Amino acid sequence: MKFVSLFRRLKSNVIGMIHVGALPGSPLNRAPPPAIVEAACREAEEYTQAGVDGLIIENMHDVPYVFDVGPEVCACMTAVCTAVRHLCPSLPIGVQILSAANRPALATALASGLDFIRAEGFVFSHVADEGLLDACAGELLRYRRNIGAEHVQIFTDIKKKHSAHALTADVSIAETARAAEFFLSDGLIITGSATGVQADPTELKEVAKSVKLPVLIGSGVTYDNVEHYLDANALIIGSHFKKDGRWENDVDPDRVKRFMEKMHQLRK
Image (cartoon, rainbow, N blue to C red):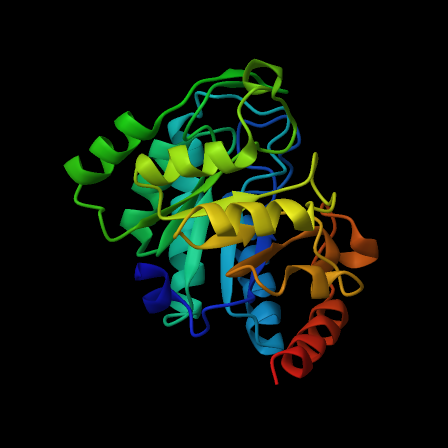
């Protein structure tokens, strides 16, 4: 399984989330690109010093999100990702570009030497808070092949957060997982209903039994509930690692260190 080559452990790898500052062109942008890059690198250093197993870089401050991101977003995200990769040459690193900008994320990952992307809307259409999000697996995998990025893994959200799934209410999360596996996803991500909201541990068990792919938890993991998710291949953690447990704040090194100390004990 390719996942093994990315991460040292088969279970409960910890992926720290870097929320880059609002990029040029977005309503909340206040800082120039060099300052945004510097802040992202500072968070990457704090994460690596605490011993996380990987990183993912995301433009979550670019609210409200759009489906058609501009070239300035790709350029800035590539600058950030390249700098973080240079700082952490051997750590597995991924990128997500909101909203559902999966092809730009692939291009960014390829240009900056990253290992994976987090993709939205891989299979089944649903209604996100940005609008109607259609499935993209066929086009995305063909694009990955066309640009020579087949070494970049695609981890895909299923029944993703911040979305209504009335259109697919008759399709279980296990069926969605099997569809994503059939459409050649490299790994599946399970979330709660929103950023920071706990994922359902029973869904983790259900999906893990249904597919042979790696299963990741993409929201709501904390110091107090991590025991429920130890069977996941990886835990993407953003909100809990930030000051006061709020995703929009800076990384809190003490929170990360405390969490990783607990993980070291649980792994024994």
